[in-house]
Length: 289
Image (cartoon, rainbow, N blue to C red):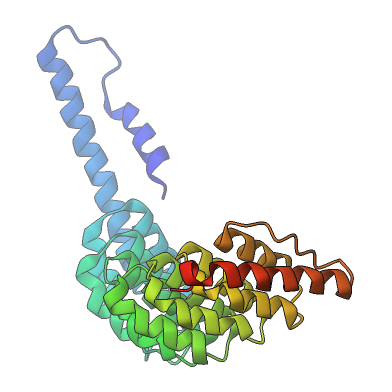
């Protein structure tokens, strides 16, 4: 049953003849409101019945439609349906999404229990829902999760929690996480936090085996204006990391155009490196601290 056709059908309940007085108009409105409420309650009753249906497809559809209706009273009923011992992962994911869409803050604990589910998709859905409901701290224990996707989300979320809470987690991930995408997110998170004291960790990442991590670390160094990294950027280019992004980061951080071109010959590139070393010798006292 859909609401719109049901509401349109209310016209048959109203008298067709024009009414003269305001009192009669109010009576029509009241009659329509009562009829609409009956339709609404009937639909809720049917959807609640569908939550107890034998097949998962009907239950999943009911949860999604209850969320679309936006009735927060449906939250406890949906949460009661999310028993991990009885429901498959796809149904649990749909239920968690429905609770998030309903903004059912009162069901955070029910969702939190699913954040330890053995299926990584359920864990990720639960953590995302908790985050949407205003409890981002739940991501913190997941920075060491076995699943790359969950760790990526966890370290990305750290940058929103403030430097005191997040810096150590991001630095640890940048240095030691096995997944290069997660390490990039850690470098990006440190840039967002803007803590210049983390310049050494980002500088060390210029030697990361993954070019994406090196690039993100270089750009993060520019964001936090960590000028002591300038000679390390020069060395990274000299070591063969002929990367346009690293060269651009060097220019931006030094506020000087060195003219390094990754497509140039080895001799031409070395000439630029030598000139950059001379430039740094002239500015190290000023920019090296």
